[in-house]
Image (cartoon, rainbow, N blue to C red; front, side, top):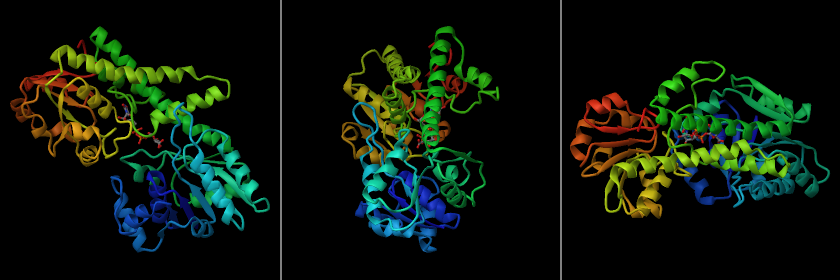
Length: 433
Ligand code: UGA
């Protein structure tokens, strides 16, 4: 099928590359000329495992094309996906100006029946607004609007797209639903057909539930610390119940990234707009923020004053397998350490370069290997769950540190093994701290 994707950011680019991979003829549109030039040269502006190979292969086969011309893009596809940013406004609600602009641009050039698909994460009822906008600017043209939310995780986006748990298609017409079934025919995954509003809500409700699961286990971790229990064992025990499941029950510094913090705020704002405030989600946010405060308190309890102390931090990205620093808890942690006068030396397997380019990056030292970060440091903090931190030479780390102090904000290391190495180990919710 001929498919157009408007917006070649994280979601648009991965979706376009995967659609091309399964045999569709895809044209990705972006108004950023620099970005399109980079992509045409086979360079991927983000680190996402497997994406570069997919883009290069499908550009070479001619199934993946890029353009800055929206008109050309819209004429190309019988299905036009909208995958533009939906950033938060200061009050937490979603800024829909890019979606509205694309709707107007589509109206400008649409000539015959097309299915317009909203892939961006949007508040419920946005589909209705997109349809109204297109009809207002181009009254006599046939089209349908569909909601098809994405469920990609950064770091495994290609896999999530090619082998999804489910595909949600929200459409209010059989004609549009039939077109969408053809788009997803090459994928082996259950398809859930819903109305548009429900599909839009599924996305916000799913992300909020995952964030709630994380905050739930983090709240349990506080009780574990107060009572001498181990949150890892508790998570294992409750996760073995199939109705609960073990996924997203990893206690730690809390969730970050470009999705959960923003989507929770948006869902709260939507609920308030509808006159039905979803207060449970406010508590989820509070627990998430408290995790970092509690962790920093723990560091202060050991080091007393942080001023003028060298502290090693492993992990800058908001999670493993990405170079994305957006809303990373590691960054909030470093901001706090720097504010208290600490000299931070940081290492991240992929996000070091991005960090150096930030204002905060100029106030700390970013090194290229984990061991050298620990030289003459007073403590080691683990802030991101990169699995490679588990296999570092801890004998060398111990030799390097002034005092053998580890604060593991992601419960990545085995406390017993750390103790046998001679470390004083502080995890999250792992017995009395
Ligand atoms: C999330 C969802 O998982 C995707 O399904 C969704 O499509 C995506 O948002 C989106 O809306 O685009 P992502 O933000 O890439 O994906 O990352 P996650 O793997 O969900 O992790 C989010 C945060 O939660 C990270 O900071 C991670 O460290 C934290 N986390 C995750 C925990 O603290 N504990 C856990 O058990 C799991």
